Length: 75
Image 1 (cartoon, rainbow, N blue to C red):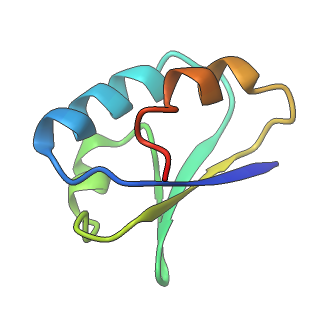
Image 2: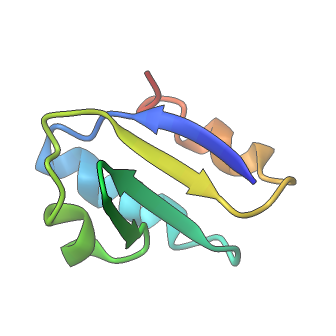
Image 3: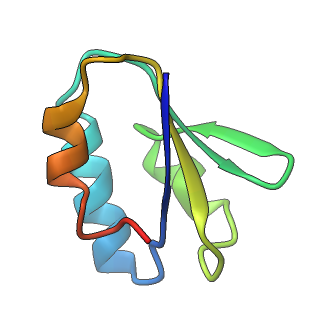
C-alpha cells in the first residue's frame, strides 16, 4: 500500500483526478479526517472537505504509473 497527500481544491481537478484513478484496477481510497471514501466515486469525493489536503491510499505496491499521473495534485 502507498499513501500520498493531494489537494483537489477546484471542481475541474476533482473531475480530472477521478478520471485518472478510474482507469486503474486496484482499490484507491481517499481519507479526510475520519471519512474514508472510494476515490473512484465522484459523489464521494465531493462529500469531502476539499479545502484541506486529502490522503490517497493506493492498495498496490506497483502503482508508479498512477503516481506519475497524479503528481500535479500531490503536495
